[in-house]
Length: 296
Image 1 (cartoon, rainbow, N blue to C red):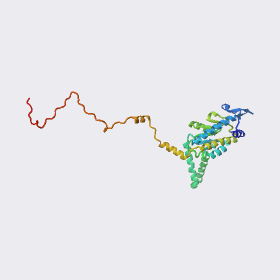
Image 2 (cartoon, rainbow, N blue to C red):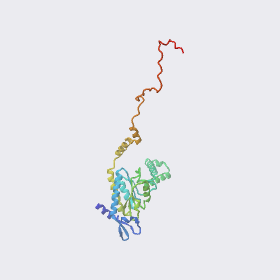
Image 3 (cartoon, rainbow, N blue to C red):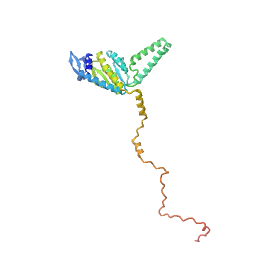
Image 4 (cartoon, one colour):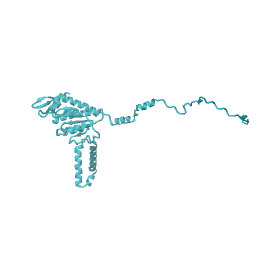
């Protein structure tokens, strides 16, 4: 902990924006003012960083990914290097509208990139005219530049890590619309209410961004250690599919009823004699068949 605080202070993460360029919502995270520059409370920075690390570790351990977003010049190198090191998606060029809300279209563009790469690798692109080949190469470079970082993001991430909430407002809005938790490095001119877990700190210093990314990616590594393997996930899914379905209360009630007797086992009631009806006389015998009936 002491080494972390020392690294944060040496990186200058406690230096905010000018006093005239601040957001009043950041007041709880400030320590004071020095030379007309707001000083961020380092305790609040460490608190937000630890909360972010704990949440990221839990999300990654559940099998979800974390997407890192930092398109400003000071953050591109740190975000790309650390996110690539832990195998997580990232965005360092431009946040394309609909990256999360219209994820199906993004996947279609990535399929187009695979087709273009196949043309180049197989040499089929040489069969096209120079003009068409140049157009295809330009399209390939554009898609690669914008979508290379999220190429392996086949599903929506479990969390979004953002550098500079003011610059990445579109990413924040998409994440909020989809209910994706957000963690962000917020300077004194940012709005902490837009983020679920704010980390107050200087978002213009390359060293401070590097320290934040290093700590958050370390939480990703720890989460991957306890992440279930693909085989275990497949077995869990198979067990859930093979488990018997839960019967409704009506079915359980019917199962508790006594069985209905079948016709073979149902007792046949004895015939009863109707009241007031006498039994008819027996048929005449053979000996008295020839006797004459009595005269009237």
